[in-house]
Length: 97
Image (cartoon, rainbow, N blue to C red; front, side):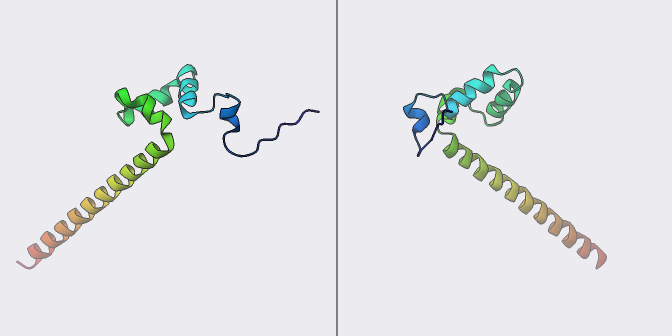
């Protein structure tokens, strides 16, 4: 029986295995089942000509996307909270008349 032991990071690269995120993108684009997902993701984040860079730096870029999403959620929450406070204040001042 043959066994394969993987020790440490870089084993895949040292053995020229296609395991980079850019390789994953190529797999997604070439897959009938997953091509639409890849296209939607790239369109959603407006990658344009930066597509290869984005995939090469996937972990860094994903962190940036998550930060942006959190910021947008917080902005919506604050905006909704502010609108609610404004409506309540207007309602309260109208009751006093």
